[in-house]
Structures are given as C-alpha cells and as structure tokens.
Length: 180
Ligand SMILES: Cc1cc2nc3c(=O)[nH]c(=O)nc-3n(C[C@H](O)[C@H](O)[C@H](O)COP(=O)(O)O)c2cc1C
Image (tube, rainbow, N blue to C red):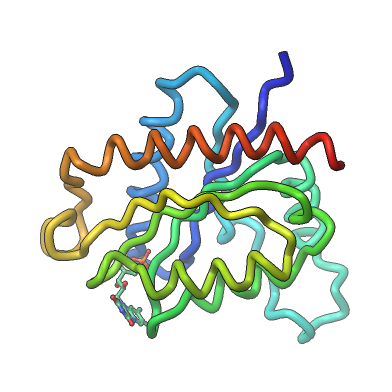
C-alpha cells in the first residue's frame, strides 16, 4: 500500500502565533487514524525571504520546494489576517509551483468568524496552483474555541469535521498521485 505523506502547514509566522497549537491539535487527530503519514510543516523554519527581494539562492527556498515535493497532500492551518490569509502564507505559496500541482488540500481556519473569509481566498489561490481543495472545512472561532483568543480549547463538534476533511484529503491525494 502506498502511504500518503500529508503536510500540516502552519500558515502564520508571527511571534506569539497560535497556529502551532492548531497544527498540533490537527496532527493529534490525524495520527490516530493510521491511514497516512502526517507531519507539521512550519513555514517559519524555512526563513523564506520576501519573494523577489533577493537573488533567490537562499537554501530555505530549495528546502521549501523539496519539502513540498515530498508531500502528496496538505492541510493548511489558516489564520485570518485582514479578511485574507497571512502575508507569510501567500509568500510561501508563491515560492513554489510544480511542487503544489496535482495534489489535494484541506483547510482548518480560525478567526473571529472562523477564518472563513481567509479560507475562501485560499481556495482561489489553490485553483491557480492546481491544488484540489476538499469541501469539508473545520472553522475555529477565536471566541468559543480559544480561551482569551490565545489558548486553544476546541469544541468537540470540530472532531468529526477534522476527520471528514482528512478522509477527503487522503482519498484525493491518492487519486491525484496517479497524475504525477
Ligand atoms: C494583522 C492582523 C490582521 C487581522 N485581521 C483579522 C481579520 O480580518 N479577521 C479576523 O477574524 N481576525 C483577524 N485578526 C486576528 C487573528 O485572526 C488572530 O490574531 C489569530 O490568532 C492570528 O493567527 P496567529 O496567532 O496564528 O498569527 C488579525 C490579526 C492580525 C495580526
């Protein structure tokens, strides 16, 4: 059996961010499934420059593309910044092309309205990158799924949604692998 490699991509890089908590929570649910290999992928670790401001020889750029190339599918952990995704996530998306193509992705978002507006922007970007985004989309509220907007205490109802989203990501990742 071909085991799918799924990257859980932390979509924010700021000091004090909550995305690592959300990513670890998703990974905890995912690892119980035993259907794929799941790993956290932290954009911050790659120290990507701002696209176009350097000669593009930073090792992090190659490492980022190599990491994405090793993955069959993605779960984007998406924070809402001014009704969209963070600049750091957009920059990281822009830094690869083929490594994104013909792969599947799900979204777990958070914000005052569950990060829904950011997630919908990301779906538009994924169309251009030929990433097939699945339907089920867990949305965490900064008011009811976090304490003080900073400590993740997700309501139980999200568990089924995360599992359903992962069902779809794993199935589509396997299907799309046949195209690559
Ligand atoms: C620059 C900036 C803009 C933001 N804009 C929004 C927004 O438009 N809608 C929203 O629901 N939350 C907004 N927030 C709140 C973030 O969703 C919240 O701080 C969240 O924790 C950010 O994710 P992070 O902690 O992983 O960086 C904004 C936060 C920042 C830093």
